[in-house]
Length: 429
Ligand code: PMP
Image 1 (cartoon, helix red, strand yellow):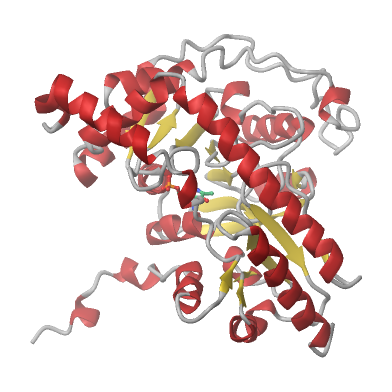
Image 2 (cartoon, helix red, strand yellow):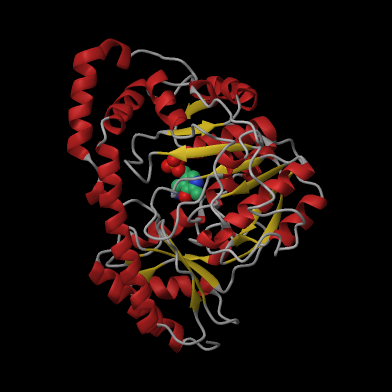
């Protein structure tokens, strides 16, 4: 008999189950209102459009849709993705006032700000050769880590950050350097200190972050790019939620500001459906070359049929209409949750007010431990994800993530009421 655990490669010791999936298991028993998962609302899935598109694709080009295809991905889908980044490198910079930022350089980075950083100055010809299709953004994170991180390398991440990224990077035996964040994303001084200490990669979710819901403001986008350039560190920009904007001005992607410095990750998971497992990387062909080889070794290519169906659905204008519909849906859920928090939570609690995405970060009074409270909360009928899941090296005890994406209006009201009651009745609060 083989003792499989003794036989396993040392890197498997770093493979941990997702804390969020563990919480989700608890919510499957009984009548628990779940604010824990970040799932898209299933009633918004364009099932009929996907059914029609699948029929059309199979009738028109069934044999190629079911055949092996190229590692880089279906040409029409790559062109569709590339077209959304045309003009990268020359993105016009709105003035600081319109983006609600205070003034160039006010965060201590000399010469950085709307006036002093207008992109690379050279337009990048972003075409299909800049796009690698992947089986979900999650695979993109894994492949980039596989190609660009050696054991012992330091990855700079926000604290809190997306645990799925940490789990994707862990097996490459990396270290993390957590950067402080506030209501506008990375605190620039903290990022600079992290880069000065030596780093190989910056991982960031600049728009409607998971878990905090906050976005890097325009001035800080420029500051992050300036620092990344100065220290020669590439940026991995993860953008699953950017199109779910409810209010405020559009902000340029980091990639569109500095295409030579950034690997951008996109996905259909939150704007179409996650079950097709379709995402993409956008970066210079040089940056993508090793990733293509790693992708080939991992799974040869992403499902040909899924790619053809998705571009058929996305290509005919349907997706723009669909986006309006899903933005309205999530906006109303966000509003309801913010109103419920206002009504039910005590003075010692603070929370973010996201302009888009799916998440609110709640800070509870010091002394409370949201991990310890999680079990009690589930027993009382409500689930959230405790803050510590989002911190690479401890911390987050008085934070938690709430998702408003799948709960009904009634569930939002009663779930937040339960949470408020629990927090008020817990010693220490
Ligand atoms: N990055 C972030 C920040 C996410 O929240 C998620 C989904 N939870 C992913 C990546 C993975 O997305 P996909 O379904 O495209 O693999």
